[in-house]
Length: 159
Image 1 (cartoon, rainbow, N blue to C red):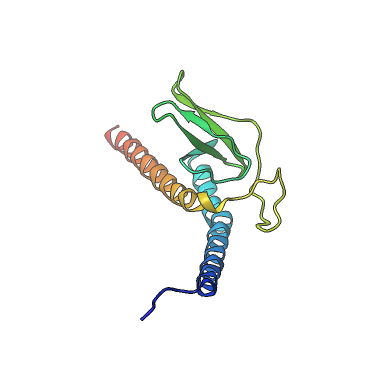
Image 2: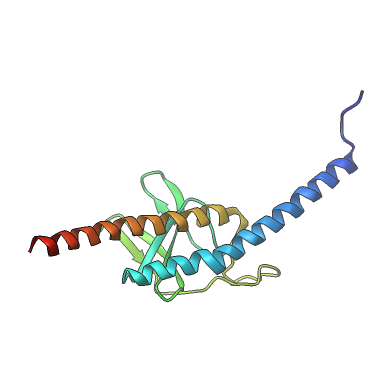
């Protein structure tokens, strides 16, 4: 029995997979825009921070320039999500051991179809890593500030 698929069957299968991929990434990017980034901005504001940096291996937004990671000799991408909700590029300055945040600020373009050059929009290739990075940053900040709160409480109790 011949189990080899015809070209038409393969093309139909590819179309179905592509359609499903398009739908799920549209939903993920919408969640990043409507829920995940606003949640991070809420956390940034609640802890009185100027911004939080997300350091990524995959380019998440069209138009971003990468920075060179001298430890791995690879290109990485860093975003500074500001308390205003705007985003800036960031670059790790190895000479001073801290993030340097660009002055230029942008918002993610909400129109996923028909993006033209110069518009900032989420890329499918970096959407999963970005969503995970946002979740991890919120958890990291919560843990850090919970510890600071405990320290402050112990100082108050001991005085």
